Image (cartoon, rainbow, N blue to C red; front, side, top):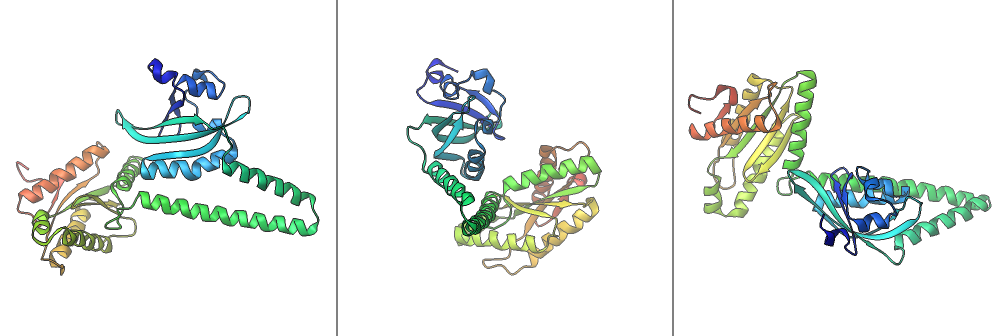
Length: 328
């Protein structure tokens, strides 16, 4: 870390995606009244009170994962001696060396944040209620019930944020991020149990021609309609997602090679027979069934090669990676 950043008039801290401190400058260490080496490897929440941890979980993590950045977040850090240090935080989530990191700039605040005043006021009111009469105790119970309701509402908000972060906004299917997480989970389950699963990649044939002929709005409607068709033909445990552009993917748990090809043909035939808004379309499909040697990259690569074979072989067809034609 160069001397300018190390002694800058603001704190700098770099976190892993899980919140582990990777590096800090001297200014940040000075804010917390500790040596820099004491912070490395600790979770950032270890320097927070319980209340601030809740605030951090409620706002920082959902926003940084949803939008990739957080601006002007006010909360407090806690020094090793227990002193509260009010700060203003800006953060950005980005990849460095193929690993997601969160870089944050931390500025000391000279006045307490409004939420701290609210918490102090609430604490004071609770203390008064505990010392009051039976009527006040009833009021306290009402406040606790309201608090529980707020907690439930907060959980619902977080669930909605998480759903937004894993959903493709155009088609309503799961997005690429959710698909990749599900693919890793299915690979781990396969290694543990040996139960096979399969992967399908769908691509609309001549989709550029549809956009060029009928316009992008018509192309978007075609994507939405195909997404609905794929979802309607899928089982409850299947993961159907938009991979990007006109490509879709599906993870088929507990599905071997032969059943996978039957499923792929059902998808292909339904698309070919459907009544579409603009014109008749077809889809090409590449399939791969997990093997002991597979990683996330290799099973995707095998399914993609099978998709290429379907395209190269005339489109409107399904190809399994284990049945590639000669030279495919």
